[in-house]
Amino acid sequence: MKTGAIHRHYRAASGSDLISALAESLERIKREDNLTDGELGRFLGKSGADQGKAYRTGFAEMPVTSFFRGVEKFDGRFANDALALVGMKLVPLESSAATDRDALPAITGLLHEVAVALADDGKIDDRELMAMRPELESAGRAIDMLRERLRLRSVA
Image 1 (cartoon, one colour):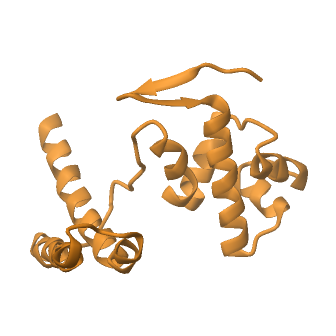
Image 2 (image 1 turned 180 degrees about the vertical axis):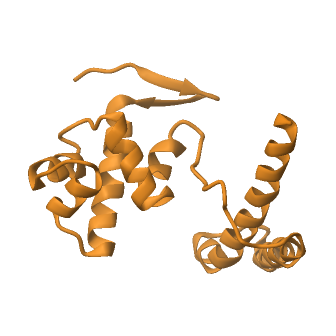
Image 3 (image 1 turned 90 degrees about the vertical axis):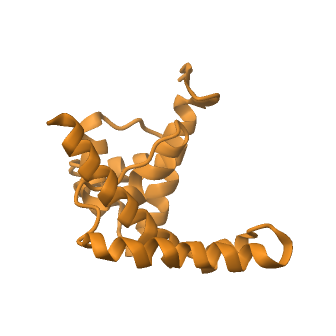
């Protein structure tokens, strides 16, 4: 199937790129969670292993209802690689149970790790980035919590 590219901020993603990203996410989820194709299919609202396998291998484009069932079940693990192709990411609205007071150590913890990584050569290499993942995720949750509060206030 030939599809046009989706453009956003100088990025382009073809339909097949998006399907492949979702397929790779499902493959990783299947492996990490020790699931069968039948279980994947059921989580995506389909009754058989054939459809779960078709989505996991990228041989089928899933309907929007299956996509949202995957989002509901697997969160950003499922959707974020595909969404990143168009410059977006998925975060739950209740992204953190953290309080306002918890935001400071989360964000400064990340700043400390970044400073340590930059100290020797002015760059953050892949090993350093992986090592700071817990702090990065924690700071991201704190920032998402503050963004969500801001969004709610701008609606009112």
